[in-house]
Image 1 (tube, rainbow, N blue to C red):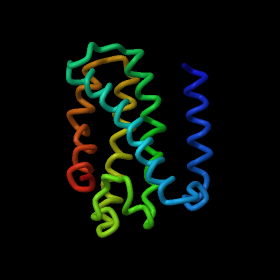
Image 2: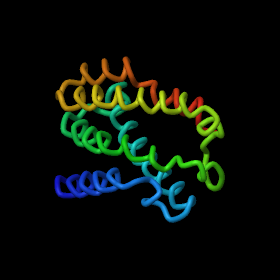
Image 3: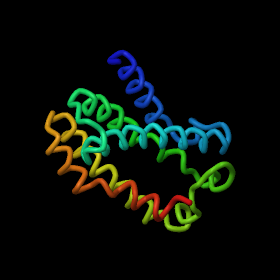
Image 4: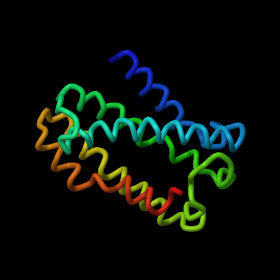
Length: 149
């Protein structure tokens, strides 16, 4: 698991270092990439939320492992929202491109909350995770409500 996580972190760091235009040969590639990144992010977010809400049995190691993936994954999809990726196989609303400042604000809220959730998950205490999700768990919903069909 640690080797795979190391590979994911290294790959993500390399991808983040490249300009968005260099990452995607075609708009369809960007859409596929961001959908994949959002799926990974959502999966690990949901696992942590489930533990925070008591829907999944709390496991401190699993929480820390999911937090490690979330810590990287939450940074990945944003470069793939280029101007030429508004149409195609996407659930993205046009508001992303019509209201870029509002979309950037949603991204920044996520970037502010994820480190708190990651720290809480790594604490080994379910109550810390519950508190972090109570405070910042709605950032995904906010973005979905405003920017996803």
